[in-house]
Amino acid sequence: MEREKRSGIIGVIITIIILILLVIFTNTNSGNISVIENIANTFVVPVQNGLTYLKNKLNNNNQFFENIEQLKSENAELKEKNSQLEQSLREYEIMKNENEQLKQQLNLAEKYGEYTTVPGSIISRDISNYSKTIVINVGSDNGIQEKMTVIADEGLVGYVVSVTPTTAKIQTIVDSASSTSCLASSTRDSMVCKGTIENSSTLKATYIDIGANIIQGDSVETSGLGGIYIKGIHVGTIKKVVEGSNKTDSYATIETAVDFEKLETVLVITNQ
Image (cartoon, rainbow, N blue to C red; front, side):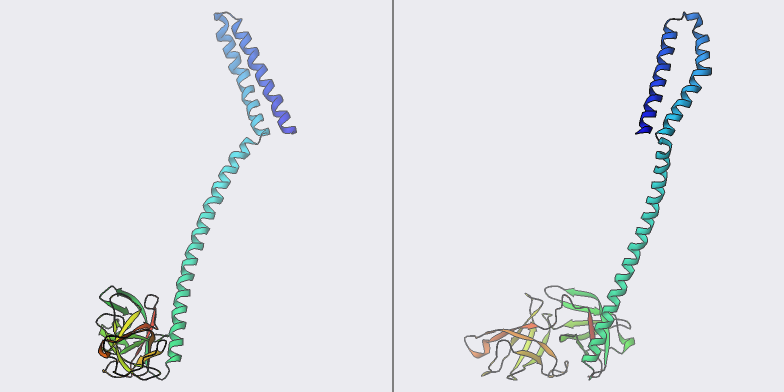
């Protein structure tokens, strides 16, 4: 409050000085103007500049500009720190994902301890209407060969169809060209499960034995026939049984145990 009062007084003084000079200039003949101008330039202008500086000083105007520079510097530092934090967060997320994948691989290895397995992570996938294949980051250098069974925590994934030294391509059981010989877990009735074009998580079970008693909700596992898959690996669950006009037309739909859209980690069984 005191500062504003002093600033107002100084402003009034400056105004009075300007008015006095205007009165002197307007009442002086032209011959004397140059003399008065010289006097004004010599005495009045420095005084006016000094009063203006004093006014700014009292109003902390110079400190205002100093504060702006300080804020600019602090803002630049904050931006740099924010960039570093974002980078650290990205690195943390990468490490977290890698740790989660390693944990999944360890759990798989423990669950299927009866087999000799090689863990792998999916690096690409082709899940279209006609082709449902995936590629993992292990290959012949890791002992992977064609026709080896591939599993996940929930059950059967598919089998290896081709390898490179560092990668392996897997045809999944939901591929429309895939056929899996299976058994109903409770009744032990046989069937052949094929991938469908319509759905990436559904199999169609055909070639069901005449007189078979397929039960909705029963689980389905590999039969071990066909020379590809090991016997007893969980495939999925019978969701629907459709009776045809004759027994040969009957079929069932199987919901796969593996969610192929979210699948990230697999095991390749090497001791088949």
